[in-house]
Image (cartoon, rainbow, N blue to C red; front, top):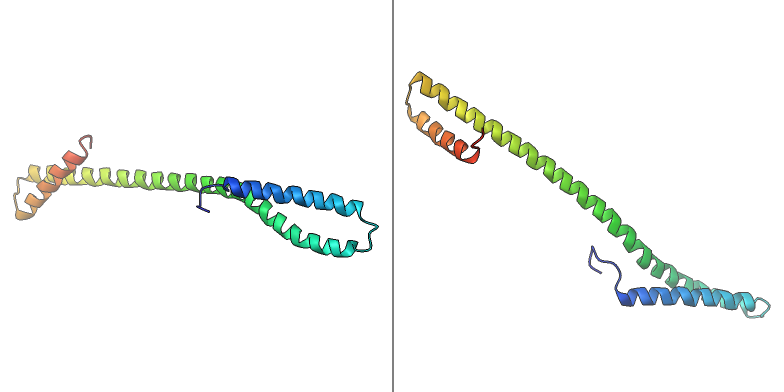
Length: 132
């Protein structure tokens, strides 16, 4: 069964059928409680009981799994948004620092080779962050 999907129609019908069969078997056992073979019938009911509990687990367990998966996805989306927000703030801070460094170099009037790279970074920062 794929991860984020519920049981198929066949699984649902099979599960409901097993539960109905189990309830019917319980009614039959109650009606046959004076039968000398009653203990053997109870023994057979235990095997059916295991199948019914597995079917109920498929029917109800997937609903629980889907809801917890949805909560987990929401938490992960919030975490990704927080990381993206932090990265954006760091990028703006870096752009501001590069622009401030270029302005200081321009005021001093020095044009060393390192300043050419700094100008390229400042141009990139202006293009990526026009409001910085």
